[in-house]
Length: 503
Image (cartoon, rainbow, N blue to C red; front, side, top):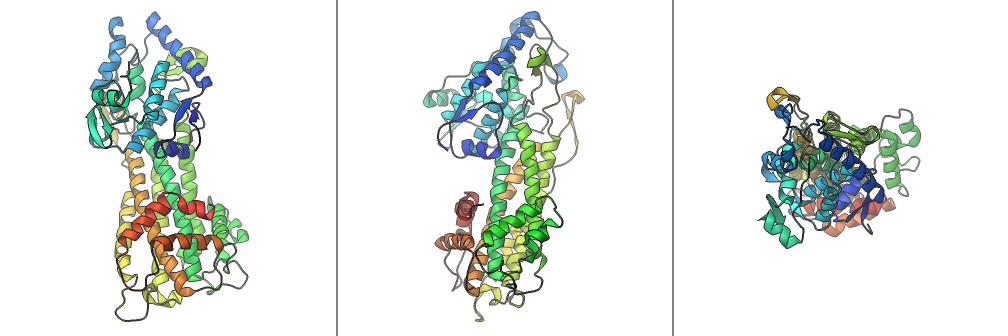
């Protein structure tokens, strides 16, 4: 990516979040967004000047929302709010996750609906571009707004929390001096703006969605390679066949597989070795297509959360007023995250089945265990145990977050969505899915080498060469764990296989 990402308050997607969070792309604020922020802030200042009640602006929070703040305490309340809500515990977010959270809050600030002081957005921009990484504990939010989780960010930026420098936790005041960033000055409602928002959930969900898409693409490439090694029957992915029941994602998934197998023997008439293959081959377009459709639904949910107002209170610029809002509640995002995890678990399950079918000499026509017939060879047999262990972990992580009430704020905040937990589960699942895809890629490469087809699809051949650069043909038994991890990281998670195959 060349040049900074221009933020407008609209158009932000998971891939761009990942480019800024993981890739370190710089950001800049569009001029139109500054105008929106100025309009929103003018309404906030009018409410302060006229003493019009607005939640969190000149009132307390939660159970104290009925209490009015004295006029001379309104500005100081922002800092008090941050200190009192920075109550997260446990392992901190990774630097990329913190950057994703910052970007999510920054972009939604630009709609003007938060009513933040414009310099808050400028400060977040500078902090992102200088790679200021606040220590943000992972356990803090129940997905009904991310108040306590988010508070760690402004707590660091005002110079009172903690910041990571080269992996070391440093007192924020010292770290800001080292990094060349002034302490953030909070005006009326600015503390609430940086805390009472969904950016913690949304930023994590955006990274998880982007990683999940790469993992699923890795599984598609692995499935195509398995087809080559198995000499599979491709009639189920024929365009006419897939189109007779256009289940969500199925037509696209079948098209991807044909794209990958184009130029090889398998798409030719009469090339099939068997009349019907096992379901893990025959139904790959249905299974991976369903996962693709679910990830698309997740991206649609994120398009809303990354680019629209979730603030409470909410500034309605066109109506020149401030009102209470429930837009911070995230049931739909939580459902889509859980749905993606469930769908990917099905894809994982069938990937394990394909590996076993490749190892089965009776079904595949290949040497048993993808090795030689010599009695002393273990081949891929022992690999099924860590592979099935991975599948168990993936299925476990695919279980949905709990549906349960909350008892916060003396019963005023009595609902929870646990969207942050759903996002973190999906990210963990995806990391394991990358490993599982690497297992299938190695097994499929071995099957291709053993099958020795007269012609291999060029795109599959590119993937095969990339795998063999890391993991040579398995002739004598040897440990493969580090090579599996390298393929998962360097080819699947990185998106390298996507580039090589044009997916």
